[in-house]
Image: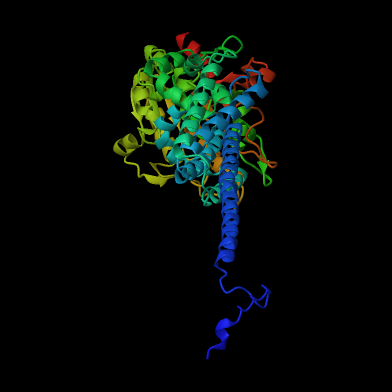
Length: 558
């Protein structure tokens, strides 16, 4: 009934493409395994590349940051003398920069590194600008002690901002920001990177220690005895500023200040003038030596000073501008060059017993000072008291004694220079005793926008034109003051520093030193034919305010 039961089994069909086996799980598993292994290998290669990119990015950041620091250092260093070994010092600085930056990049998180890069750029611009304005390397002590005075002249300092450096810094910050915040994973753990960073910082400190014993640059000695520019050339800013804070104190600052020269190069060469009953010394704010006898826009800028120099003992003097305008009046009143470390008025225990006002007091002169700024500025009031000036007048005293109306000048409460001159003139004319008057003007300060008269340039467009208008007005006001003084009054006039203007049209400096004109004259007579100093020497810039002061000191003693 069932014939198929005895039939042989049907042979299997060959495994052709059209007749695939029904079960293909094994083949798929093999293929998936191969694909997975390939994906893993690709992932590992990609991971290693990402890890390598992290180190490439960080290397670029370290180089850019170190070069930024080197740029700041090169543009802001003002050493007072050359130690030699210039190329070696460059390598030292670059090595220190590299080690310091590398240690920070290995230890700190990315956000902190980026913040420090931006902070370095901002501080670097400040250091370069300060160096261009003062022609000095910034000391951390000056930064901390003169910060308030610095903010008061920020408008003038801003004019010296290095815009090329600003542009370069912005590019570097952008590149560093892009590289820092890419999603890259480093090969080694944070613990290992931190150990490497600490090692780099230890090498950084060791290199500083080695350098401090080499090339006659022993660190503690130079920090106490030399200015900042001589150290930063080798070490950069951070080590020197740190050493300043730890090594400089009241005693070392005072001792270093007392070692500054008290030159007297004029007395042996100059005619010994007899001092009259009234002596007036005027420190003019921002008076260039190069503005004398100068024509701008077809007009004579200082006609009265041009005339006065022909009747006076005429000198080109170094007035010093290490920390601010107060360096000039310190040099003139104290008969000593200012400290290179800190403004002398900020050194609390500095002695003033041998100052010029003290000598006038000993010889029976009454001593006066007049300034249309406030008492606390540069700590002048306290210093003038110690010098023995018996009648001190700042803006607070001018308001109280003379009822003057103040106005806001560059952020200061002040009175105008012509008002100050009128008060001094009245005091001189009514004073019957022997008297010495010391006067400091104010409105000639950069950016030269306080003066509204525009006699030289009716529509000033730059700093040169504003300065010309300003100094022309000062020249007119000083003429009125000078001609109002009693006949026979001795007048000493000089600038506290130059305008720091440098251009193809006009420059305030014709030498490295910051020099201004200085004239000693007698009202109502000409003494120019009595001047014995060789003009080549008198106008060479070798003399300083200290020489002028010591000349007067010798005359007072006689």
